[in-house]
Length: 219
Image (cartoon, rainbow, N blue to C red):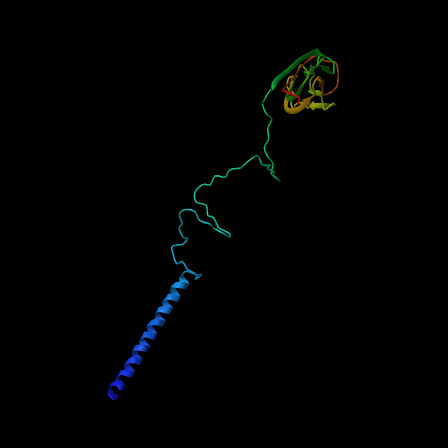
């Protein structure tokens, strides 16, 4: 009996120790599984970025990289201010009425010749002159001719001069020039041709004065 107790007591102790170790292992496993349902951080190794499908909620700052062309729409009619950038402009070609004017003056031996009947700008229109020309025939030897044109713009009258050509051959002086002149509604446009020497007498000179432009409606 004493021998039996001597061997049975250690065996019982070993069995109890085994049961204790098994119970602790089960408790540890349960705690590990419970932590998986909590706030344990997860590190994703790959693939990055993580592909998603369906609807996702994103918070914080997100960096977006363009993939293919983007179309941007503007809602409403926003005001756009352009600073320090000159913009090309041009006049609208609506309701332009071309005007050509030509007058023969002379032949005369005087120092010059005026257009007796100036062109009158129609009511509600503004005349814009773009080209002026003068031809003088049978001038005194060594003399030349120039033309002046008078307009009223903004209620203010002004004289404009087309200088003579640098070369006069066989008593003929021809000159023309692009200009930009304005004339108010109901105002008159006067022209006058003169000898450069301002000397009268000698051969009778024929002056041909002309200009070209267009009429635009006055707002």
